Length: 153
Image (cartoon, rainbow, N blue to C red; front, top):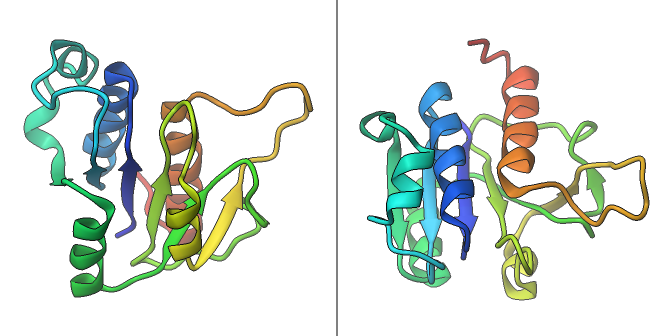
């Protein structure tokens, strides 16, 4: 089952919405610090509603700590970025892929992008729009992976 990884998320409601999406799909959620909020933040909890007991949540203090956990489990690291090299729609996914998303303000850092096996982008029709909201991007990417792999809700 693919996993969602948020590297340095900054906005609690976005992370809460992503947690709710992960709960609904049975997808593990990894938060990589530093975070722009406390995990106990009331806005985070409110956005996730009462679904937190259903979230398979993992917290890693640093990207290096996350890499250690990833190496034990295997799978490809796929970085979502506006500067990605492949469209997320045309990319062939595997069941053990890890979907990495960066902070709302800066995206994935160059060091994280360089650790990725592939970088993906979500095409947008309007060139003046830099990016989608983080929680929307995660949902779009995750549901395409699930569609391709036949994980129907």
